[in-house]
Length: 516
Image (cartoon, rainbow, N blue to C red):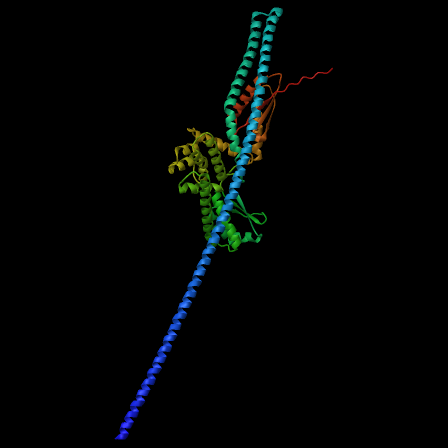
């Protein structure tokens, strides 16, 4: 019995010892796990702080980088603005110098006019003295010769006719001089300032475009087997392709400049790609049409934006853009239209008229030329119809129709458009005349002047912009020379067609030679 209790006691003691050891072990593990968890949390917090600081540093760096970029951009813009201001200031100085030069020239001209007026007064006094002497001589001759009544009357009438013609010439000359002194000076000033401000490029008018080839072998690929490629190309573009003996080049022929440009771009793309077949032709032509349409829209938008004429219908913008591919007498029509708009704006500003409306009328005056190749009618008629369709201002519509005198101008802006159109078309280098037309115009001018009595010889100079007439001094006086110049100018207006103005200068020179 005692052994049993001893065994039980030992067992209980062993169990208690094992339980105590297990508890201590579990507590130790818990303390270790808790310590490890605390270490993990500390490490996580430290890593979080490091990541947070890293992100903040990166954000600051990114902010500083953006700030530096913005500051650089602002500095560049400021530099450009300063350069622009410098150019504007330099241009203002040039304009001021030009204005001072013009004023000096005007003062010199005024002084010369005063001197000429004084000389004319002296000549007039001499003419009056000469007339008195002629009358006195007539009386003395009548007494000496004892002419019959009819002869004396005839001679008297002849003398009176000469005196009357001379008096009429003097009156005409004085009226013209007075009108020029009051009106021409201001008109010249406005036109001179306007023309000096205008300078633009010009292009050659042609109905063909030449496409260079890398080699003669490409011509065979363009034609294709049995002409399939060239037929497909001509059908897709509506342009005639001329493959001749011209070395390393083919010619595209069409009256429609837009179609011709589409064909040129498409053919260049096909040649660069090297693959030429009917399916590829249709695809490339479609791409070229899109490219030309974008360019038309861009050119039209830029023209309207440059003029500062306000909003304009999208269809009219596209129509204006088509003028980029149109030329007239070697002058690009869109550039010509912008030049006319600038001239109209400057003259309207001088005359205190609506500058924006004047520019709008000038820009759109030739808009009918963009569609005149595809529709019946003159470009002025088509332009008026197009402007009416999109409810343009009546002044613009009248300016379009009247700038070639197809209809009467009913406002001052329409007259400015006609004048600006003539200035742009007639300035040196604006248009290209054929040699045959130039020679014919010169010959007609000289024949008109040679047809007048007392004219010795006439010479057309300055590309037909001026004609100088030499007269026989014994048959015409200084006063009659003014009348002759006016008569020649009127006959030129009646019989010839020409852009701009033609200056008529009559030169009378008498020489007295004696030998001793």
